[in-house]
Length: 367
Image (cartoon, rainbow, N blue to C red; front, side):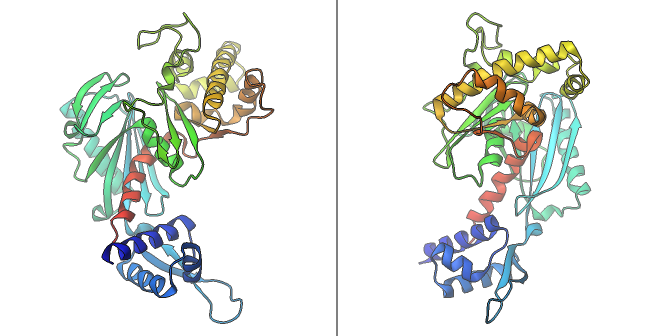
C-alpha cells in the first residue's frame, strides 16, 4: 500500500509538471485515479510546496476547478558542459525551464587549478542567478568522452585529451551532488525527456556522435558504444580521421571542418558565409553534401526523426532548406525531409540534459 501510494504521488506530480497547468478532475480522468486519492495527494504536494494553485478554470456550471501547477522555484538544478575551449552553465527550475545561462571561454586543463576555477565559476553563476544554495538538487556535468559510470571514470576523451580521469578529480571542489554524462547522451536527454516517438540525435560538435532513442529509452548497444556515427565511412580512402581510419564522418561533418577555416571560430565562419565569402560558401556546400549523405543513411537505417544538435545544430536552422535539397538526390523513397528536426536547446542542450537528470530524478523520490 505504501508503494502504491508513492507511485500515485509520483504519477500525479509528473503529470502536473508535464501538463504545465491542470486541474484535479483532469488528473483523475487522465490518470484513471480516484478523486479521493487525487485530492489527498494534491493536498500533500501543495502543503509540501511542490504544487501551487495559480488560478481557476472558466466555469462550465457549478464550482470552478482550481488550476494547479508545479512550483517552479521549489527546487533547481545546474548543468555544466565542459568543452575544450568553453564552459557552458544553465540553471533549470522544477518545470525544466532555463532561468539562467552563461558561457565562458576557458581552455580545458586536467589540473588542480582548472577544477578549482570550475567550482569558483559555478559558485559565481549560482549567485548571479539569485538561487539559494539549499534549493539546488545537484550539478550534472557533460563531458565529450566515454563515461564509465560503474567505475566513476572518464575513460577516454579525444577532444579533451583525457584518459582514465576519476569523476572525483573533476568535481572535488564542487559543494553540490555531482553526476557525469557523455555530452551526446546528455543533450539527447534534454531533447527526448518529453518525447513519445523514437528518434536519432546527431551531435555535430568538435567531434561527431549521437544517440539512438527507442521505446522511450537510449539504446546503449552490447558494449555501450552505440551511435558512434562519427566513425561511419562516408568516403572510402578519404580524409584521415583521428581514430586512424580514412573517410569517417567525423573528418567531414565535425564543427572543426568549418571553424578551422576561420581561426577556430564557428561564429565567424557563419558570419563570413552570410556576407557572401565565396571560399567559405564552397566549404559549406561541400559540408552540406556530406551531411546529406550521413543523414540519409541514418534515415534509411532507422526510419525515424533525425534531430540535428551540437554546435552545428545551433547555426544550421537557416540552412535547412539547403540541406533538404542536398538530401533529395540521396533518398529516392521520400519526397520531403519532414523527419529532419532542429535541436530545441542548441548549444545549451548538453548542459540542459545534465541539469534535467536531477529534475527527473527528484520526482521519483517523492513519498
